[in-house]
Image (cartoon, rainbow over all chains, first blue to last red; front, side, top):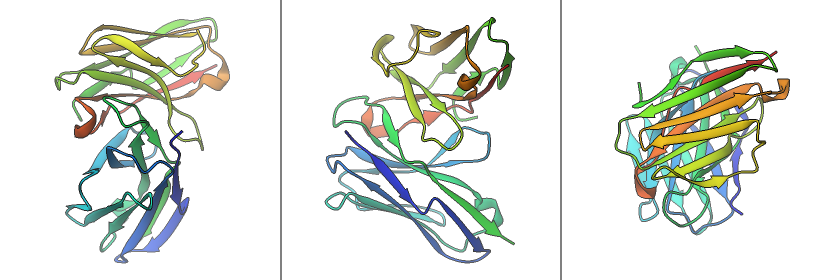
Length: 114
Length: 112
């Protein structure tokens, strides 16, 4: 059974700092990995999707890496801003087959202090 | 808007009420999902529909009843809920496994 763990559970940094969020998963036979952002009381916004054949994906100040063999992914946020404050969730499909539901970590709650 | 629309955004209901949550997508996706998010817990999968057919029921109590009349619409019918059912209910869709998932904004449900 796939399980996803995110460390740290919460993080507070001053504005402008670069930071790394960690995600690990127990079954390395994944099809892809997705990072989401969730603002308080809101739905999820997809940030980055990394296919199993890829090592990393970039979007603006965000860079996500994937190491399938070790069961790890990191989300790097450069030059953090107060608007980056949110909960960041990592998710992988539950099984290596079509249209499988996602398994989520509990998330990392990020606070960027101005 | 993400392309997945959920209504209502907020719902307060008594334990004896019957209500329905609605999810709609016009992204051409063939799979739709209901997830539940309670405070301090990971998102919990409730139901999965592929091409209008239910393919997964994650041991959800019968007071939650899903309905998928077509590939663009998904409902969650609620009756005789308990206060512990209060949560954010999220709908999602996906085209196929390689292309990622799109979530709606959720319905914040409060059972009183």
